[in-house]
Length: 443
Ligand SMILES: [Fe+2]
Image (tube, rainbow, N blue to C red; front, side, top):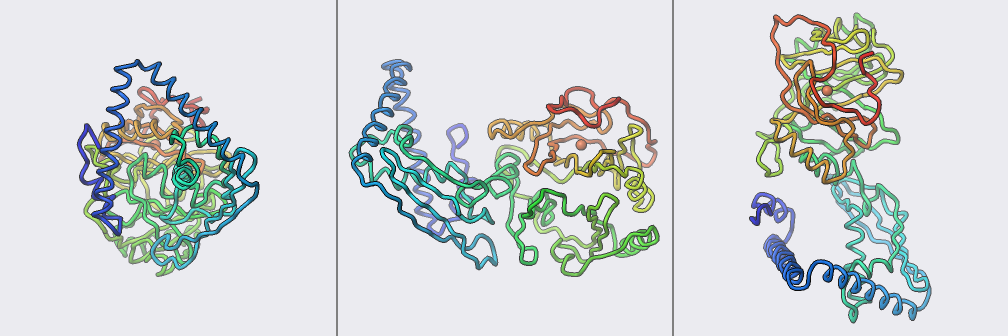
């Protein structure tokens, strides 16, 4: 709903993912009507009795419900009961079973629900913590509270929930419930990489620009560049081999990337760098939340940091022929491979890392909408809104659970062949206040 009007595209997306679209469509409308009616009735009560009185009665109702349910639980026998259910089809090709385990213990005047041992989050069958809590309410209240007012806030105090994080009943990012989808409005599709699951973020017309792999350690897995033609791929491969890089890559890997040919090598910090040709566009435009703009339009750039800065510069500038746009000597260099001001920046740091990855938004309003959603969803904002001096982009940065930052930006400039590389001096025209110390601050 927006401004009291049902958003048809969002409602359609909801209904079409169901086996019972007519039922679900009616159910959705009934839920909207019930919420609307409840809100009106609460406001009517507040008009009549005042907010303080209404709130104090609500608190008493919750306390009363809690007291009555605790009294009832006291009369029930002590013990532990357990069950295991299975969920299937976490994504296309998944033939596995994913266990949901629960042990319920009645202990005095409370119930403890222990979901530990439930399968790890996977594909598209994940449920975040609020869903788990709601599942308990739905099953317990009709069984235990038929004669008690359903003041759920009070009744839930009688239930304790034990659960591991990152499971299918308590999923967190990067399961398909979090930052990319809810805050940035990006579609995330489950796919297979050999036998391994992978989540693909649909940033633009291509199959994906960002892949999330399950791993024990949060490290960048590969950095990919699209090359113009097969001839150019061969030429760059020869240059890499002459510079001492060992070429690898298989047709299967190319297929996974949606490319016709792919080669990869290992860069001086140990990251896999891929060159590919033949990526096909798989959609005319990615699906986006219907809030007025196109939102994210693609992958902007990344900042790669590590100790061997000279070797990294040699690789990108001399071997792969990226062009230096500007810099702040001695530790920060911006390079381009097309008209965009920079597609990669190389920086000196004690340990190798991706400092940040920029997700390009169409407009300042799109950046602002992502900012609003980041605030609403408690996404940690690591660098405030600001404008960079060199590429003129306006952006803010959020932390992601893998330990590096995403820059949410728009308005980076394009430059021509007559551009002269120069030291750009200070980082920002305004803003970009860092929560943690800035590792690349001008000294
Ligand atoms: Fe950036």
